[in-house]
Image (cartoon, rainbow, N blue to C red; front, top):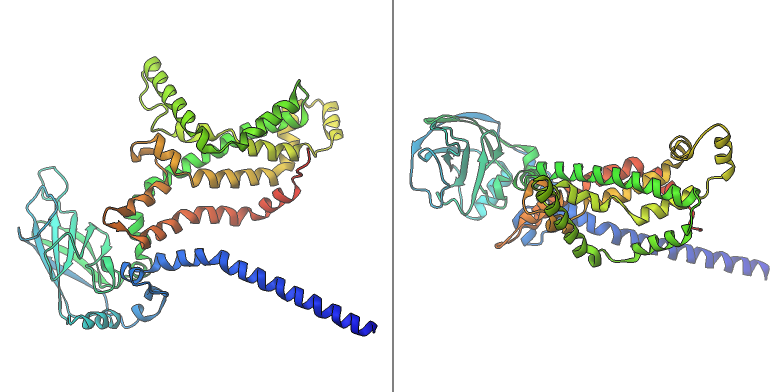
Length: 433
């Protein structure tokens, strides 16, 4: 009987363990699926996404094999006025053409399905955006057998890779690709090759350039670092005061302060905005300072430099530090400030790293508040740049996903290098009063 009970017990345990592993596996797949879909969509072309293709061609070998060799061309230019929807130019519009006699098997196969045979005629429209009295051609439009700018065209800057919209690959995704390295009023010097980086990461390159992500990234980095610095300073001082110092009504004040964390941010959003407007008027009328608060980094960072959760988290950790350690430091001549900076903070790296990660993520992902307190792109963060891919014609989902991956990378890198301290900070910080 004992052997039967033992076998039954082991069977139940194995079944429960198997069920637990199955549930955890299913949960992991569900958790990973959105991120996998994000990555796959960021590689797809517009056509692949609209047709709901599961696996993008960019993650196969087909576009990258059998590529013709690179070459450098001199393309003569001549004046033209036949382009429909052409952009403004301070110099006469100039036109050139490139005859493409070789294609990769992948592109040739797709073009043949539409009855398009080689050779192909790639038309180039050269425009001058510099109002200096000199014919400086620095913007170009590339199309395939067409002089229509609004559709099936790719706009390039001098020295930038791109190509016309070949079948199944918008913005010259599958090549051949062209880079105009020299532009004069009578000819262009063009490099032609199959740019593997552009073929694989075309959405990322276009998203970065189109949405001016470099500028938005700079804004996000600055505002995030300032917010983190302010939160760490104010949170550390307040948490130490609540944990280690004695003053009247300390517990009541801490309870009231902690209760503010329960108030949804949408409730205080309008009062915060009115305070920003009042401060903007005060600085303008008193000191003659324009945009001292509104449309500046001050409105994006200072309101978030005090965080109730940060104070609570650090206070719980500081309260666990033995009182005897402070008494010993007091005998050695330490005051509160020196005890905090030389003893408390060095042994509080884990909770401090947790505070940095959480507040960094909140600041980096901020969207609604920057849209409220800014009216120009001067200080808007990277999350606002994603909105530029949503137009009246519809959303370019593949570019939104590529931009989302770009915005996610800094957070992933930060967590990758600080995950140990982050885990220790959550595990070692007590929640007792």
